[in-house]
Amino acid sequence: MTSTEHPNTPPTPVTPAAASGLRRQHETAQLGDAIAELAARIQAATCELLVMIHAFDEREGWGEGFTSCAHWLNWRTGLAMGAAREKVRVARALAALPEMSAAMGRGALSYSKVRALTRIATPSNEVRLLDFARCATAAHVERLVRAWRRVDRIEAAEDDRRRHAGRHLETWLDEDGMLVVRGRLSPEVGAVVQRALDAASDRLYREAADVDKPLNRTAVAGPQQEDQEPPSPGQRRADALGLLAESALAADLDRGTAGDRYQVVVHVDADVLGSDSDIQAGQANPAGQAALEDGIRASAETSRRIACDASRVVMRHDRQGTVLDVGRKTRTIPPAIRRALTNRDRRCRFPGCDSRHCDAHHVRHWADGGGTRLDNLVLLCRRHHRAVHEEGFTVELRDDGDAHFWWPDGRRLPAAPAAPWWTGRPLAPTDAELADADITIDAHTATPEWHGERLDLGWAIDVLRWPVSSGSRARDVPAGTSLSNESGE
Image 1 (cartoon, rainbow, N blue to C red):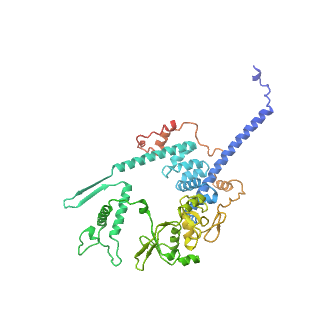
Image 2 (cartoon, rainbow, N blue to C red):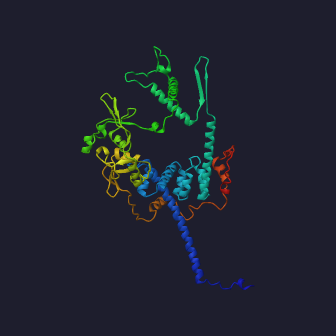
Image 3 (cartoon, rainbow, N blue to C red):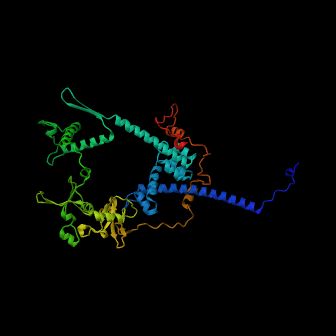
């Protein structure tokens, strides 16, 4: 019998250094468990946050001056705009995914996984995707979502190519001399044609002020019958197609410039913006008239907003409306001042907004005697330019260049509100809710059931995207798609 096998052999003494090492190893393991448990609790708290964001978004609690819920989050909580938009997107998606939301609420699913899965998850596939996420790392989930969306794009491209290849238009003369038209157009071309037919039909059959039934234009529709019935919808479209053809040929198929097609013209009485005497007195008269090109009335304040930063042409009319004189087209704000303003402000000055597509706003309107100078101009996006003009918000530009905003009720709108002071223990509200729901979170709650095996991405797409139902086979991956070899694996 060897000495090591003798039952009376004394145990090897543990040195102080070895004991210290074992104790440190045990404390490190406990620290790792604490990190994992706290991370799971943070996921549960994040789920609670997303539920609250969705409720706030549905009630449009952000609507008083802010462009969207994401802009409000950026202002109120300090989240970057990209992160705020993702929070709102995920919150909206989770509202329709109860199983995924419940798993995240238990701390079993991380925000990283949920953020990825909500790009492809639907109520019909969320259970399958949730099963995959429980057995995969966040990196695996991201790869699956990228491959899934790539298959979606391939299918969408195939559909587009199929529709485009199927376009055609046929015309022929029938036995009685009528032209027959039959064809198929791609969706975008069809939308343009449909819109043009609607516009031409409205032009042809616009109701006259003193006639109850629609007019029938003989120039396109042919001679009128003495006892004429209102045209049917099909007849209206046929007449509208004739008008479109005549108009296109008369214009030599000229599409016009983009500026002409999208220019909006507002006719404004001088009294709306302010006469010379009004400007000297610092007042403008809102009792005048302002209207769009088609006759729709625009309010005085809307006209003043548009006039803040627009092209301006003065046309003088007589009492009968005849144009007597047309002035030169000028800019309300000269290009040099616009460049200096853009260099100074960079983006919209309204708190919480970072839009770069902005109008130049006169703090004191030029019609009220305000100068077109940098110390009287701020950049505002279209949403907040409207808020300042039509919704009662006010802005003041201080001598130091700071822009101060006020709510319609006179309350100051801070540029960045102070963060609330948290006095309770971390995630205390979530702890109470978890306890009430009999949910236990420990160090292994969020650990995926993954044992190191390699992800077979092609097989995962086949099973998750096209599951096999009883008596049927899984749908094949579209031709030309290779998924199992992604990233060289």
